[in-house]
Image 1 (cartoon, helix red, strand yellow):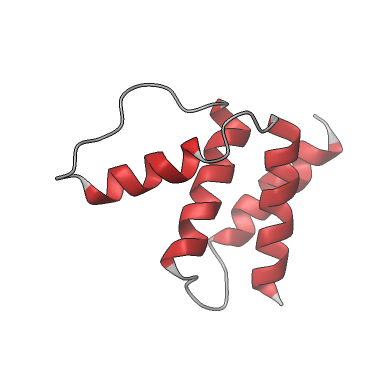
Image 2: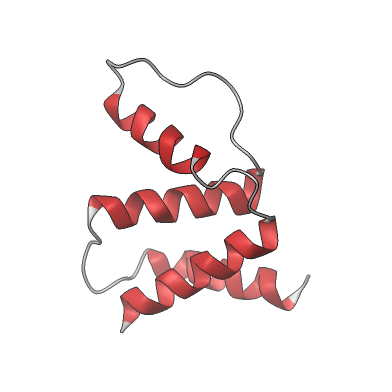
Length: 85
């Protein structure tokens, strides 16, 4: 396994042990970066207006469409690092 992937997986574990809960905007960024790193570009239909949480997640993920898996992993690791301080 690559060093980046190991660092990413450590950051995912660290995300569950943050000193305080991040804001909703930061949580959406983390979700989008995680999904981009693990699944690639968003696919499928955007959830309807009655599913506000699903729609927000979809929009956050779609906003970083085209980002490489490695870049998404690096950005995720950096964001978790900034939240731990």
